[in-house]
Length: 135
Image 1: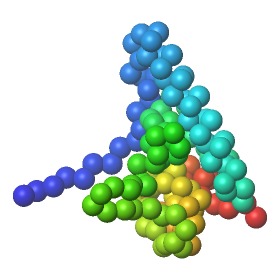
Image 2: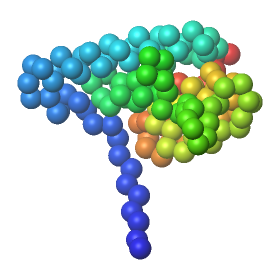
Image 3: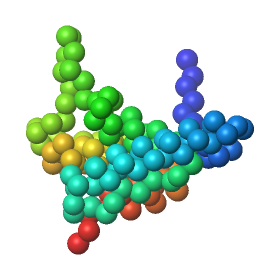
Image 4: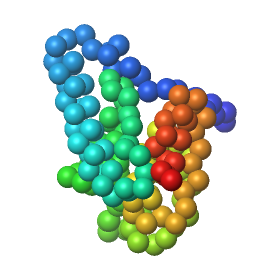
């Protein structure tokens, strides 16, 4: 079998909106992401505020990882196994780190070290901004 790995940048959700309902939904997602990002900022005061692009899929990533109401997609407690980064001092490898939301999530959960890699240049620039501690 052959496999192809495709890299892409988040879509500009503004390009996808064709109705007032879609525009309102995009603004709502951005507003929710902003609230989640500001709450997350309090957990990592030595890092700059979490930056994300408005009208992009960045807001959806923030919601998937940082939404405490629905739980992070990366914290699972089930019948067959449990997975959590909580309090174990893990070393984490974040491949396809996007803008660094999971990187920061892992650090906020007590990861000792995170190595993050993002090949797409505009995402990598934001990753560096979001994952570099203030001195």
